[in-house]
Amino acid sequence: MKRKIFVNGDMTGKGIPKLAVLQYKKDKFEGYIYGDTKNEEKSFKASSVEKIEKDTDWELNGPWEVVKHPRATVYNLGEDGIPAPSVQSERYAHCSEELRKYCTTPGRCKLALHLLAGPIERLYAKLAGDQYTESGIMQIDLKKTANTNGVERAAAYSFARDLSGKNVHWKLKLPVYMPENNRMPRIKDNAYIKDTCGKKLRFSAVYPDGAVVLDNRVLEKTDTVKFIRENPHCMVVLIGARSTKLGNMSVEVITAEELGATSVDWDTECLHWMTQAFSAEAAQRHKVKPAVQWAKSMLDEKLESSNQRFDSKLYATELYLTTAYLLIDFLRSEDNLNPTEEAELCNLPYNAVLPGCYTPPTESGVPTQAIPLSEENFEDAVQQTISCMLGDYSKFKRMETGEKWPDTDIENGCYGYFHLFDQDHTKKNLQETVLFTVDDFTKLFAQFCPYDCSDAKLLKKKIKQLSEGEAGGCCLKRGDNRDYFGKDNPRKRSVRLIINQLDFLPKEKQNALKAACYSDQTDNSK
Image (cartoon, rainbow, N blue to C red; front, side, top):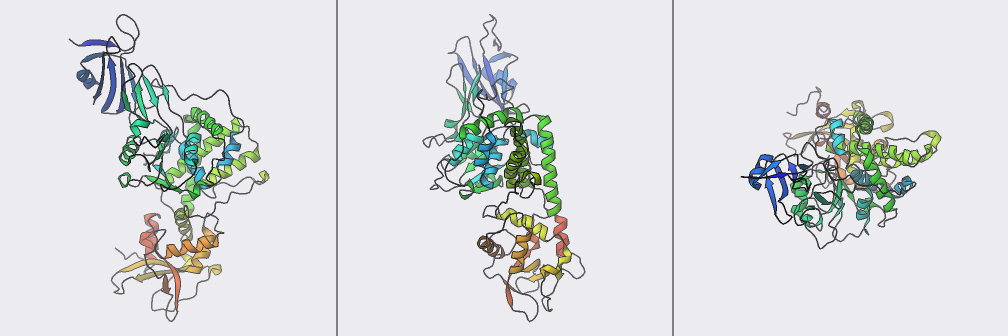
């Protein structure tokens, strides 16, 4: 006969908890069970509640406590018995000032918003209703020898929600940065769930609606892959190389240069308090819903003006904008911001995430934040700029190789040429292209680019790499970026965009550009 266990008290009414279950996903349960004494223990793994009874040889009279993993329907550990992160009673004044000290580069802004998005990401996904159900990861591209003096560790402490806690059944150890020291390269030694009865059992850690920084230069690579896959709604920042097993999960890559000065030049305790207080009240549907609507409207304007396709990277952009909106709303009340202070604060995260989306009110006297073009944002700049540049077909002339070509004239509306490129000189492999002189393309790039292109040296270098197929993914790889511009004209340095490679454009837009390369305006490439 099976022994009966009463979770909320045994038959004598002693009230000693006997059973606790962790549900990791629909068919994965782990937990522990104790008899009449603490020494009578048994841990188990099972694929269903019915299996728990069979495998443990106990008849379970519920209700019993079930702590659910994010893959399960119910996921909030606070609601299931683990207390929500506590907020220190002593509040910090003017968190917005410390946030402005931290947000000195676009990379820093995005890193903070990625970590702060932890508590709201799942609710955002439900309200946004988009097809991207996993949050993706942010990668900080640091070499093993890179010395950032702990900036990334301090950022984790400042902006990642602290989920550690305990109740009568469980103790959660969930650090915001792993490894805690370099002698512990296994995630299971850094983060775990322990029982509070015998205090001997350990279970795999879960990060429900949280954020964590993983140093992949030290941690076991297989551990980081497993952790990311098992925590699809945890906002992960990965330092170092990304495993190929993660596919295309990386939605943002920032470098040591984008982290700015390699020193912790902000008050980490103040921003840690801000994060805990923000996390405690941010994930409320009535607050997140208007933030999502505003972020979608900002992004829709960009999609309409640039003809870009919505993808996982723009999903992350929308999530960051949603988080920034909620954070500024929180700080407006918490710090009692005046209009000028609010404009200064909005300028930083909004324009770091979506350049040009926010213009401070004229009466605030705050100049619009100028985000400079950089190595890190060049790919985004290419996609946005080319999308705008190719918006009006009347600015381009369709030309053939044996003809005399008119000169381009940007001021009077001739940007470049639609041209069928005979790549191997056999006339059997014609590529639909848009051809520019490198001088014209550089001027147009600076004109349409949402980033500040005042660094002429960097702009020249990146345009050269683009034209030779070494950056941007829009041109063929070739060492000599020169082309003939019509009959009897000398070869000039050029930028030749291969329409088939502009896959950030909607398919119908690509097809229309291809058709413009033919005299009958029909896409004959198929």
